[in-house]
Length: 128
Ligand SMILES: [Zn+2]
Image 1 (cartoon, rainbow, N blue to C red):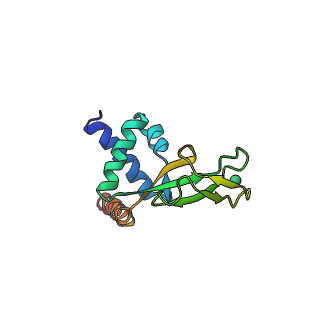
Image 2 (image 1 turned 180 degrees about the vertical axis):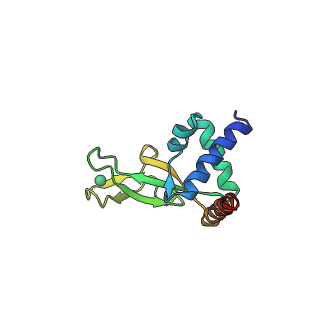
Image 3 (image 1 turned 60 degrees about the vertical axis):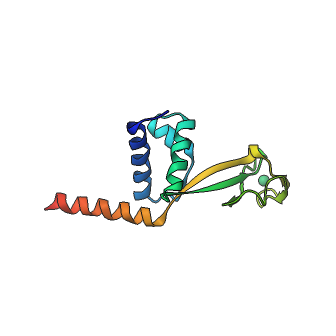
């Protein structure tokens, strides 16, 4: 598993995102910037969801290679899985199954504001 160093790296990557204009991110992005394997990254991201720092959403993506549109982004999958929905990109009917569903994380707005204020305070101290 991971230790404090890995947790810190992931938190720092999220804090950088919180300070940016990025609305949502994929777990693979965190892997890329931290070098931590996906499984460990995902587990820790889920623990941050429990803490209320992150919000987990699911993206249903069109399986058509040329289209690849995001058909829907939802909180809860149960009403979509094993059902058909229409892709607004290519207008095809899509059968929703596991391999076209991807987790995506959003940063809690309150946390984002907290991080931004913290950074502002730091800059103010530096300026003094
Ligand atoms: Zn499509």
